Length: 320
Image (cartoon, rainbow, N blue to C red; front, side, top):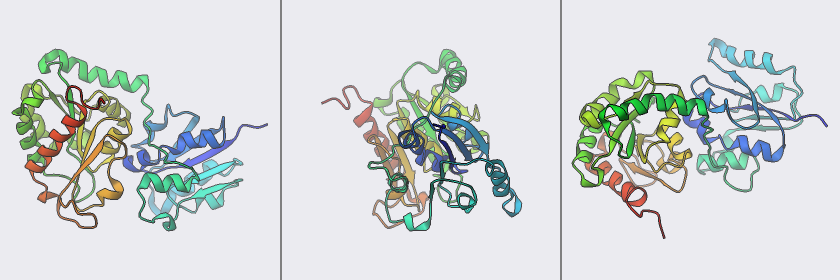
């Protein structure tokens, strides 16, 4: 019997790739031993390099006149696929030879959480929990940045990871408030000895600067220090995570880190971090209503961080 071949067309966005990452394990359950080809954007591609069953990654760099889709078709049309999964709902799945197709369409938008929607799309009988496949390379890259900073005087207390970035308008809590939040947390006895580690990509330096400056010697810098999987490995060393509604927020939740997501005029009830140790703080806490993220106060976020700490990081937290 031949080895099943599966094409999984995922997103070009980090957060959407994380939300649908449970598909990888589900492919293995539905087609044991399958060889999986993943097509996705360049930023999230490292997620799949050590994912089980994945033996090829095709980078989808956006091109004019949908040239990236023509390029992907050219690289995949010569294979007889046992299963084609297209989370992006393109026409590609219908143009490839395949025994079975799973293709997203608007009809799946029924008000369910996105993880649940993807799970139903796959025909799974339970939610497909997102998963980050952190490999030894990523852990070594994170350690190469973090461990020298520990030795350099930041101390060895717990780490609070911060993601003061988001790449869509209206999702970024003002940078100066991240600095004010760190100042408040430094003065809070619960966070005595804690370190504050902003995480982000190469372009995220400006919004992370106030938090780093406020942290002073207790700050640790992981902004622009590696690819997304190295950032995931860094977050995995944190005791708590606080971030804007962004891909890194979903990364933290998928890693099982206690995660607080900050929301402005977006649907926190649909796009909030997934998992039992996750919470949100929104500028408007009423489902179906919105307010600018600037309405989210430092006091509100500080209280939410303290509550997250008490639930998951305080001595004895989480024990029966």
